[in-house]
Amino acid sequence: MADDPGARGDDERGDRNVYGTELEPCSTDPMTGFLRDGCCRRVDSDRGRHEICAVMTEEFLEFSRAQGNDLVSPKPKFDFPGLEPGDRWCLCLGRWLEAEEAGCAPPVVLEATHEAVLRDVEPDLLREYEYEPGDSDELR
Image 1 (cartoon, rainbow, N blue to C red):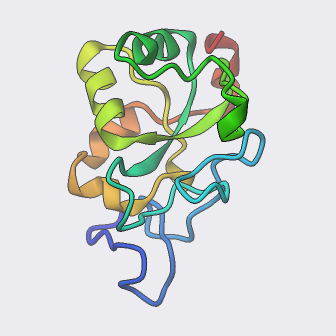
Image 2: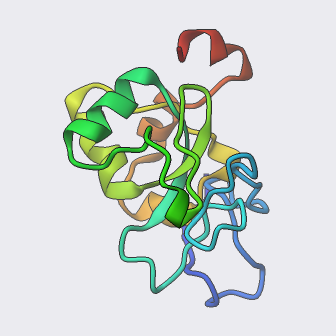
């Protein structure tokens, strides 16, 4: 994994994932990311740091709702369809860390997770939560 995570705009290589390669999209259906461009980019104005691409699980969605962030209910005025298990979403780094401490962190798509998370999360911990495409049966 990359050793020196960069912030958006501070390196001419563009956005990189935790492997140090080009950041892959997280989801365009539903459209995710702080910029709603499908990617979990590092954006200086994003105080929530929506940099971690996670695959939603029922357990995590219930945890998030209990923390006051209902990701399940649609919010049409914000063009938010609501999430369900199996959906990919750019999560706030802090919420993912809270969920990890509570034992309900969702799997992480490392190729679509911004390298900036390595400032706060050890690579080995991310690898423990690495999403494998065959895992989708366990998400519901």
